[in-house]
Length: 49
Figure (cartoon, one colour):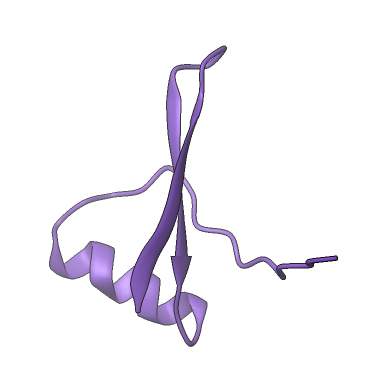
């Protein structure tokens, strides 16, 4: 599991980080262990063309 990319939504002043992980639960456990509450965690599918 690793952080792949980070983006900034300049209009909202919000950072978004993209992680590669086997499942959503792995990311949730990582943030829990770090004692950080994320605003949201969403599982997505990457399409490349």
